[in-house]
Length: 373
Image (cartoon, rainbow, N blue to C red):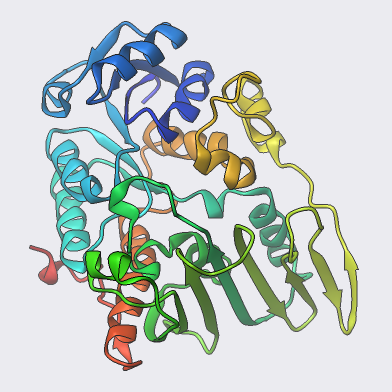
């Protein structure tokens, strides 16, 4: 495929961060925006000069001029909207998580297999400059054999939209899980998880999840390596952090404790702070600037997830580029639908384990076609 990919962007909170990236990418044409609120839709579309506008998601999917949709809507909508788009013959990029149940992950995998269109979960954590830095250490052999991995995502969600209130911590675990599994080049096989602490009953009653923190140990498939993941959303004092630590037999990488610090690279027992470089050179020149700046000016319009997450490590243009090039080159994206399902279900199965007092839970194998519905 050589013509430009015609993209529709759905959801204009966090989603607006991607608008000019698509507008400037040499293989994309942003043809439409979709938002339930007409006022918000018109405000953003006017700002970026986009004529085609939809308040109905279903109407948008009927548009034959749209090749791909990028979904940035509330978490409860991800599964159904992804499935509808795939079955309408559109390629799908969807913000995390893929879904909130194992069953819905199966449904998305089945829809992708039926449609033959690309599905990519837009996981920022595997396109950050920190991830690229450690991946380079791994690929050049400097890291050596990976022996153990640790990830954490701690964030205070008070004041966010109502569907976040009381969300089980591990239901939104992909930011902590994905860089570990990607660097190990493996999928999660099984998990044991414990819940810790408790949140206010007004929060806990929403999803029936009482824990302030959930901490899990995962065994990887076809690997002797294990990994630990900690996740919290409410009533736990901690600066925002999405972090990963990777321990190799030659080198180890540890994330900084506070945002203002730099990570530590260990050689043997000797550690030193390192400045992680930017990886904009991997991108087309037209969108390189978006690894170090948001899409808006200094007016303070950036979405909270972007500002609180320190720009998501410069990942947005890398994600956009990977999604588009997977379509242009007629290949699976990274992560593809199977990997996205495994990363998502790692957290879902971890929460299931925590709710049963730490029993071992095996993750489903989404590559077994006979299990698809």
